[in-house]
Image 1 (cartoon, rainbow, N blue to C red):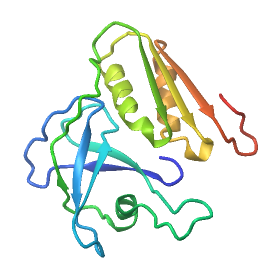
Image 2 (cartoon, rainbow, N blue to C red; image 1 turned 180 degrees about the vertical axis):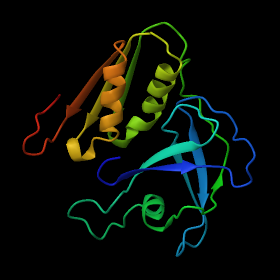
Image 3 (tube, rainbow, N blue to C red; image 1 turned 90 degrees about the vertical axis):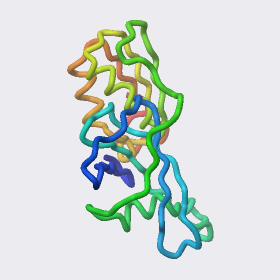
Amino acid sequence: EARDTRSFYLEPHDRRPLPGFTQGQYLTFKLNIPGQPKPVTRCYSLSDAPRAEYFRVTIKRVGSPPGKPEIPPGVSSCFFHDDLEVGDILDVRAPSGAFWIDPTDTTPVVLIGGGVGLTPVLSMLNAIVDADARRAVWFFYGVRNGAEHAMADHLAAVAARNPNVSMNVCYSDPEPGEETGE
């Protein structure tokens, strides 16, 4: 999706229907991570509109802070990136959270996300587009640079196909050849 950011698609191993969710909600994972004395609990926002076939979460690998190698990297994000394999079974609670909007509403909406915090508003944007709602959407996404610009192609395609969506992406620390803002 971007540098150090990946999407993970979750399907029920028992083939039963997934519980429904509202865009903007999150999943709570109870992870049995090797080397950890007890299960690690983490929440990750769903990053797509509701789908019957899968849940999608988009997770950025959290490394040690620059210049501070003594601080360990993110336990759960590194587990997802380094250890998780297709077919692994995870302990996940049903979607929850009250940060959501009605995608069929007609009032204009402003969606704001930064970095990997894009995920809940991306879920909302995708739900609005899937509902074919013609509501005006102002989407603001702040990120350091193009290498960290998650879902860049998808966001550009959504804006190109939907004249009601005003896409605004701003880079705070552009790389050579990029401009601050877009």
